[in-house]
Length: 123
Image 1 (cartoon, rainbow, N blue to C red):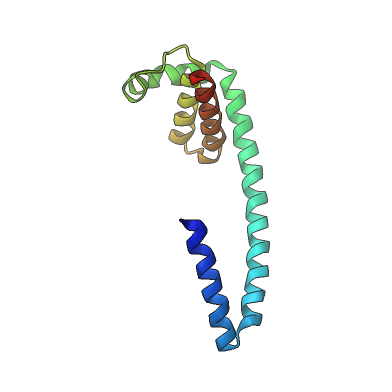
Image 2: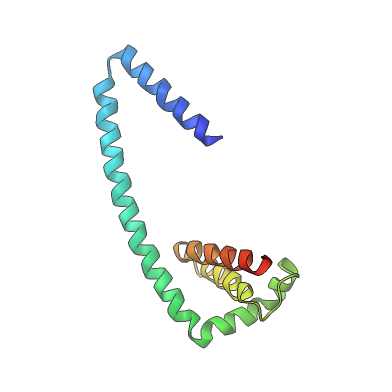
């Protein structure tokens, strides 16, 4: 749906700019926005790499195992079909732990990994 809405907004804004004579302002704002988007992407990439690395280090320690054991009652309620020794269980637990600790940028790759592991498990 967004594939339809955003192009319509862009086309309408260019048509409006043509009629009001502000095409140069739209062009300037497009290039400024592109520059800001690249800077933001680079910043987020560095942040995601940092927190993903910290979560990978924590995964190899006993801290994640202790926190996973703490989440077991919740995990049994939310995901009754996943066994405790299943790798997907640990990945989902790590995702929840990252969100609880406020590491949303680290939670995204962990969620992608748990989806990948879950797809492998089902096939």
